[in-house]
Amino acid sequence: QVQLVESGGGLVQAGGSLRLSCAASGRIFSINVMGWYRQAPGKQRELVATIISGYRTNYADSVKGRFTISRDNSRDTAKNMVYLQMNSLKPEDTAVYYCNVHQEKYDYWGQGTQVTVSS
Image (cartoon, rainbow, N blue to C red; front, side, top):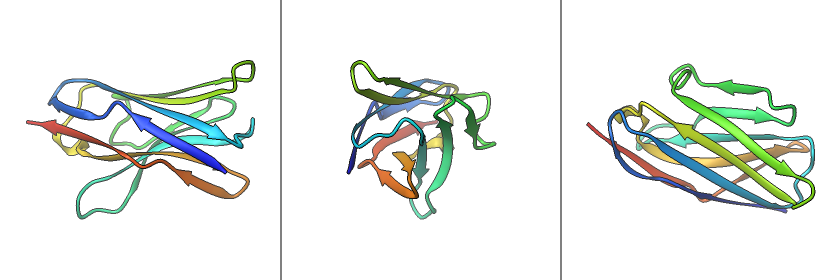
């Protein structure tokens, strides 16, 4: 089993920044995909960004150039973190942001953290 706990959401004005963090614990393998998704009210959950074990990244077009995903996987400390640095935030970025780990054909999700961007 994998447990994911997000933090860092909040209320920010348009143009501001937030940094989301996700702590992953449990059976985390060295080869997997970690990522962030978001779901706005009345909309489907959508991909924001992913990062694979080799640190190759993928972004939704709507966040390219503004958001940066990174990960910290230390075998020595058994630390597995994934971060989302969000700059130049827009009101349309308002959503619940979910951390995701995809490994061995399974998807694991965090409980979500609310990000609200005021205009």
